[in-house]
Image 1: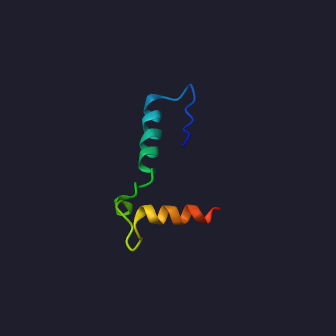
Image 2: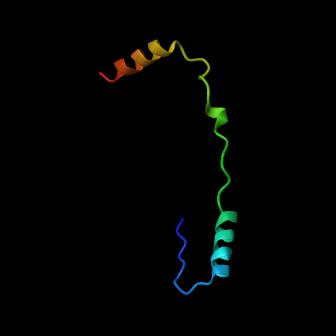
Image 3: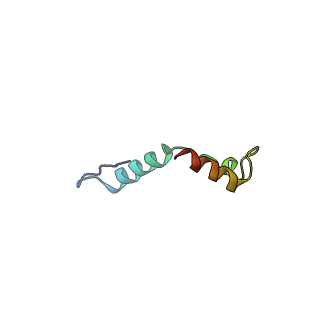
Amino acid sequence: MVLVIKKNTTAEEVRSILRKSRSSRRKKSNIASFFGKLPGIEDGLKYQKRVRNEWK
């Protein structure tokens, strides 16, 4: 996001612009649900070798 503040802008106008920008920020998403191991996948090393062999 880019905020353009001109040279002759007063301090109160700058505070107002900053307040507006803070309120318009997006809500942070919770990525904690993506942590951990994936269910139903075989042993990690076997899976990795099988997938890498598909590249050949």
